[in-house]
Image 1 (cartoon, rainbow, N blue to C red):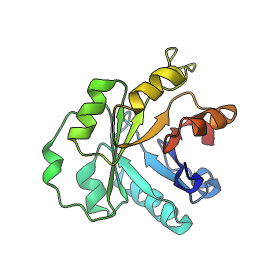
Image 2 (cartoon, rainbow, N blue to C red; image 1 turned 120 degrees about the vertical axis):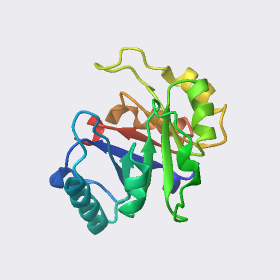
Image 3 (cartoon, helix red, strand yellow; image 1 turned 180 degrees about the horizontal axis):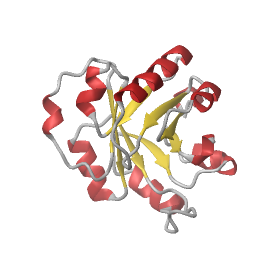
Image 4 (cartoon, rainbow, N blue to C red; image 1 turned 135 degrees about the horizontal axis):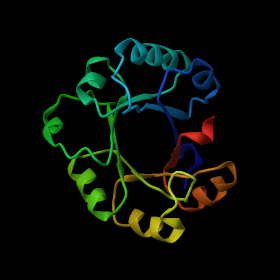
Length: 177
């Protein structure tokens, strides 16, 4: 595996200028907040900050808005079972990211034609006590031809383990904070 192909994704749920500014260009930002109403001005602030840093920016669960705001792509959570966006006109660089927790959801994300599948949770955490673990994760990863990103319970000490999985990267909330 080439290390320059290894990607990292940082989930945020609010505009945090200092957090975004300390991220490397190799780290992409995914705005994901299901608790409050979407604030377009906040999305634009995040987009502008990411653009200044040369960081890719993805919006969760709002594909039309991501296209309209000319973002780098959109993130489709595992609970989103829609297909109607397949007819949207995406620019060539626009990427779809999708999360899955099992083989059925992986197949669904393939039907949604995502570019990357985030398989979670890899490790158990305080929030999710039942992580897949290395072996189940590798087994799921082998069942798709899509690029795979691991997600869930990732700490600094897990980076070597993650790179040994030969996945395409990792995503986290707490890792970057």
